[in-house]
Length: 413
Image (cartoon, rainbow, N blue to C red):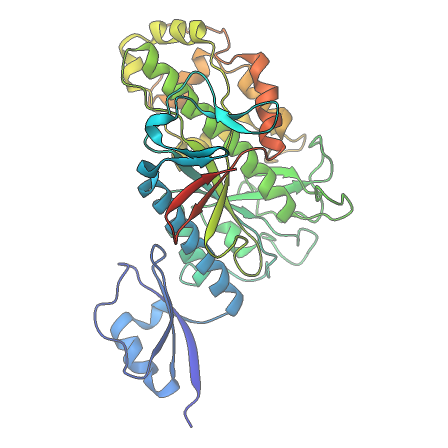
């Protein structure tokens, strides 16, 4: 009996150019990830190689398939959330259709979700902006972009900012690059770990590349539930959390700027991310939970002054948190760790400091492709008294959005 092979096949164009061998059994075909996984007799391998090219085929590692499948599910849910937007949101107390919801969702004293003031809900009700994927891996291996996980993260990076834990093999003296191979891809944001919550010392175990090659960021590497447990898998979600805060701020600024310029308000979508850890995807089969970030107030007078100072250039402001802009904001918010060539440290404190000082100059630096002429106002654009309470609500998990891909309903609770 011929030996059966399980193979991962990268599809550079996203689709097969012809029929598979007759005895091939498809185990997975990505919707968004250009990946096919098949099982077929070993003697049929030459036929598959002739069709897709031997360079695009790798032996299948089961856990890689689970993680790649998780990325595909994430991207599919993110797309469906946008498609489902006209159906409106469902909160405590009954359905909330888009036309009925007059403000950004907030919680009242009883914990119920109610419409908040100041912003119309956009037709894009949910914006999935980031993906975190963590798994300890053999740092001695090389990055193989054809293998399932790098192929999946490359596809995800076209839409999302992808965070990858840098790995925990930093103390391997026999390696020049101790990062996880997945964290070496140029399209991801690798996150290392610090020993302390204040971010003064990079952990010895934290994976790192040759000088100048990353990781770009570090965050505290202790488990939130048990500080004795440490690893870059705990650090990466902390960095992702700060990205969500910054994405929500950019959406809020965009809405306020449009309102001041007399343009139709764009609304402020709920900002969310997907989390995938080792093993099966970390969400229920039919639902993807998205933490909803509460509205942070903009100082409209300060923003009006900044827009006036920018003049015609204000019309070119780009405030949608694309992967590139979100990466730039996160790196700009980071505080250097006190070590030569060290990456930047991110935390709630660094994000709060960055937003508290966010002025017209930072607006131009982040949202314009060129530096404007003249001086810009230095008055912060954020309503500082609203920042800490808004982050507290997010941290308490008071707001979550669920998308059910079977009923195509979006639910707030």
